[in-house]
Image 1 (cartoon, rainbow, N blue to C red):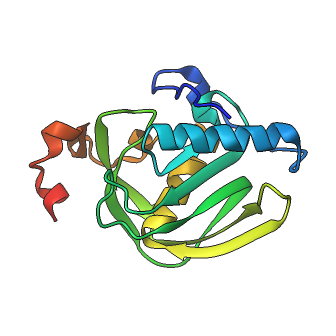
Image 2 (image 1 turned 30 degrees about the horizontal axis):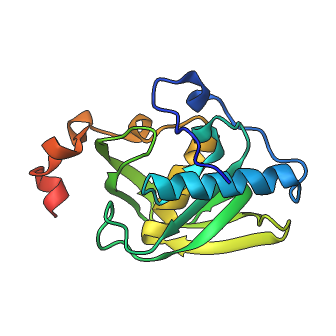
Length: 176
């Protein structure tokens, strides 16, 4: 369909909660999902939420297959998820480095649940229910945060662990 502009941090639309999708199997939703995939691919991302392209709807897409932005990250199946709900599972909260297409050139050390179950719907209106861990869990949490108007720097515990990618290249925690 189309590569859309990715809103950047500072644009107030990124801070607004997104609305649920009422008609899961509409042409409008299918067009939105195609635009999300096209935009994510054009920018080299591993996930994208509808609010990041200025559409205040609860829709995210994500996929990881050998991303240069996240070397060593396990594969995450290509997923379009509508009206997601996250259910954190018992276990550790882990910190790891994240970036975001809405905050280009920056990285931060962000705490996330290491295991979670997520539910929602596919673009065909079918229920989706998965239990995931590791990088998959991190990506889903990051993208779903966008649906609630949360950007990853809001979750960083210590802002000494946030900065430009080039400057952080020698950061001890990045080298672990």
